[in-house]
Image 1: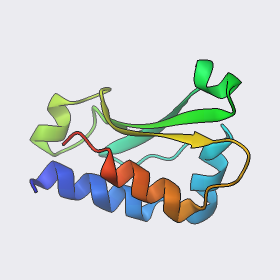
Image 2: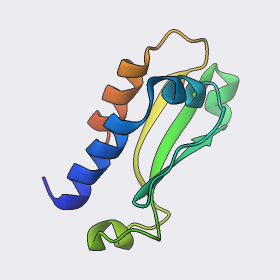
Image 3: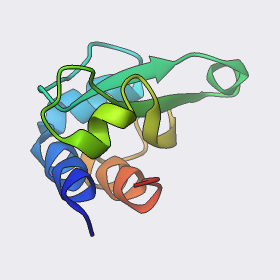
Image 4: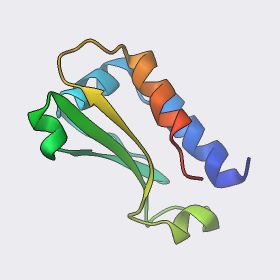
Length: 99
């Protein structure tokens, strides 16, 4: 696992539990110097789901992550009904990472 991937896992693990639950229902955002979250309300939202994406930040000091600035590095499709725990969301984001 490279530096950018390790930093991504660290970012995901560092998202507060309540923040993950808020993201699942389309509220708020979370960011650091290396990564930031985005919630996409596509047709998935109409089916009771949100897509939580994590993108690389253009202000990062990690060269690999800088190459991925504003690109999705992981995402998770989560239900908006509150049935998923923060840990379930976290595991899905880690499992789906692209770096």
